[in-house]
Length: 417
Ligand code: SF4
Image (spheres, rainbow, N blue to C red):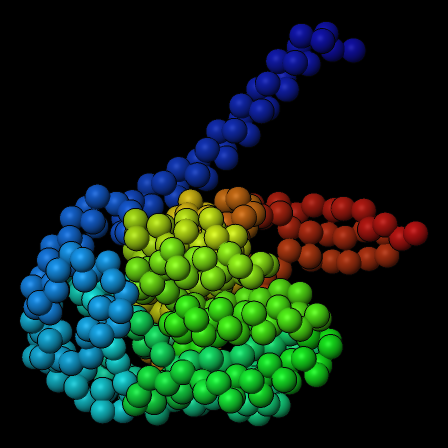
């Protein structure tokens, strides 16, 4: 038998060797992490402040206006002649934007545009906000999720047994170029009529199996405080509705909208889950953090649904950094959506192999809290399908052969009682 001291020394030496191995894994990421711009970094904030001053100058706004979300909505940039005064874009680019704009509407809040640096063609905010001539490629469908065919009542989309969506507006602070509902954006901003919302609420109250209602759009947080309060109050009156969810990009594209008055409304109607869509660490800014802090203090539970987009975030390092930054501002990474085959977005489509590579780079390599579920949506509105790398290699009545996050093949017992 080995002396106790020798056993302890052997254990310590094993632990040290393992810790060195794990440290090496973390160092690989740390070596490249800082190449990804983050909205919280002083370098990024330096260019953001310059761009913000330029935008205020061009639009004739003040610092007070900058903090007013209605000013941002009134001054969304949707004209190339204004954009070219703010960003030094080429004639070639501006012609392309004008051409796409004739088919697909575009608009971007001054706040969101302030996140674009001089290297605009490689900037993930510019790429999400400003039209690209490739949007005119004839690929994809207008409504691949068949939302029209899954709407049993006005403004309702129902794809699951116990939950559904109410679509309350087509208005957004920024019309994302990858939007799955771009067919609804149309030419003018339009909130749902009270009559339609009443009909949607009537459908929910008549279907007692519905326990979870997602209010979305467009951007649900662009409703007035009063209308949002009315809808939430009506939902609270329906006994079988247990939770409300709000789908919004406001913390990303117009965090100034998160006001004390809005938070008062949110705080009156618990439980509320707010699902947002941060797609890149550049979008995690001090303003976004403040908006998320206020929502959390109002009692909302925050989750993020990122969309995987070619040339924007289809990279394991970007996704890992995004998820870390989100956890720091109390937003739980919830889903990574595989891009849908929406017409006009084909230049951002990504292979499933790439999505799996990202998931492989997250699981085990970082906190489970920073690992969202990778989802592909079934065409035709048949719902979400989770995808993950293959960890189960063989399953037998008494044992399973599995692969660890580092690629070690191990056998585990399969309990059959
Ligand atoms: S905020 Fe949502 S609904 Fe609006 S354009 Fe972006 S993805 Fe589409």
